[in-house]
Length: 288
Ligand SMILES: C[S@@+](CC[C@H](N)C(=O)[O-])C[C@H]1O[C@@H](n2cnc3c(N)ncnc32)[C@H](O)[C@@H]1O
Image 1 (tube, rainbow, N blue to C red):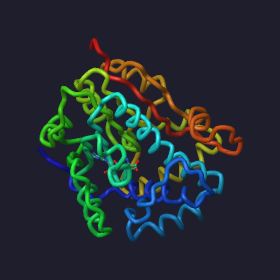
Image 2 (image 1 turned 180 degrees about the horizontal axis):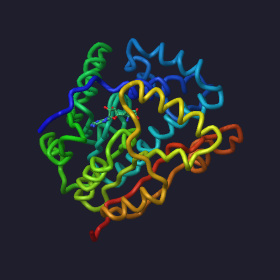
Image 3 (image 1 turned 90 degrees about the vertical axis):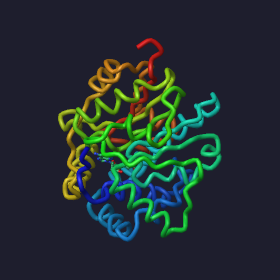
């Protein structure tokens, strides 16, 4: 099987910088990621400068807060799952996600699998080493190209137990993949033990956007395209729900701007999200 040779993901640097910039707001923060700027590496400050010059204040706040919301929701889902006895967490397209190095309270109850494109993963591991961060013993790296390798084989090699329930997160990735790769990855997850939960983001087509969503979406797409990571797959909520149901998921929970404000910024009338990207969670149905 071939792995497309490519360089480490630059959009992973973009979202790490967004998590770092969120900490420049007065607390409380949706997510406190003190490792984000360090993980972003040498390019971090230039990316932060570009955000500040190219985005309006409103768009920048909307982006940095949303990137933290989309990292926080999976952590809350994992926390609840751990209380119910779940012991596996798979972070798909992990990029510079720092859960495994920051949430020892949860990691100590879990086997964590970081799945990412081999080039991005190798670069992240090097950054961790340079920062003097040792991966926890119960973290396993699974290098996989979703377009050319199967998640089943990658996770099996890494020691994942398909018979035991798990949580999967897939944050900020589906828009960079073909529909075939998304479908086959979801189909593998659907073979996991019933009750296994997945939370993922998807991006909406331009025709579904207005207001600040359009400004932000255009800036992010420009950055991603320049980085060689163009958007390939877009969905509206009913399309992603139909795909998840067709593949064998139930208990679909949509999570967009309204839910984000209600859950993580209660009572805040100044917080606005465009909704170009949304979250959705679903559970592997018992009778597929
Ligand atoms: C925008 S980053 C998101 C990283 C992280 N989840 C976050 O929210 O910050 C996109 C991630 O998708 C991964 N990715 C893109 N295409 C991929 C592919 N074909 N196979 C595996 N990973 C891929 C990249 O390596 C990168 O880590």
